[in-house]
Length: 234
Image (cartoon, rainbow, N blue to C red; front, side, top):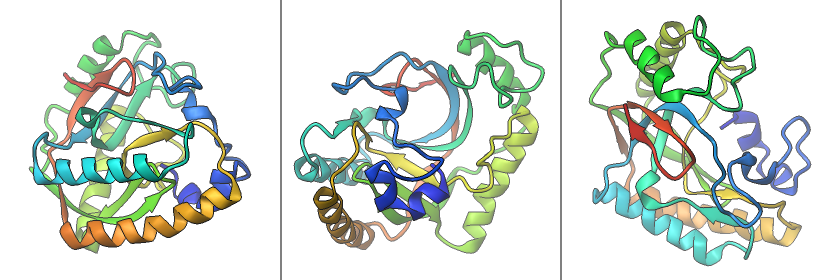
């Protein structure tokens, strides 16, 4: 998620943020909230199912589901909860300058993930990253940052290493914000909906941080996906 969008939450939710239009579920879901084909591969840190953190995120999603306006969001299955460490490639980047260097442009992402996996086979990831919840955004996303400046540097350094090894560097490489997605937004919000949401965000943020002042995210994995519902480890 782009830092500029996060800093301009209200304008973005109105659909008025210049250069960052609020697209209907980022073309990953239809207007009714059903997942669309969106194949690709990515490096993510999965949230272990049945862990305390998993249940707390599940509870947070449930609170948003009860609070958020009708027909405005589509919610992700609990088993898909994760934090993206590094976006690799997907159907949207297939014919762009952001495609991995020295890899043929094709949509066989299982094959591509095998090549990418070989490129990073000697990179040793830490068993966990220490993060904290910085902000709740838009009724659908948990914005994270390193628990300390040292923790932030560690995770950013791994993104830099991955960028070099994989031959991928997106325009937002430096301004990317780590996050856990709970849902996708389907439409622009009205002014009164936004005001209520901003208020509840503060309350939910405070409650979550009291329970989890430090969020430990487990070791990342290279995964493939066909849509936003399931991520398969390679």
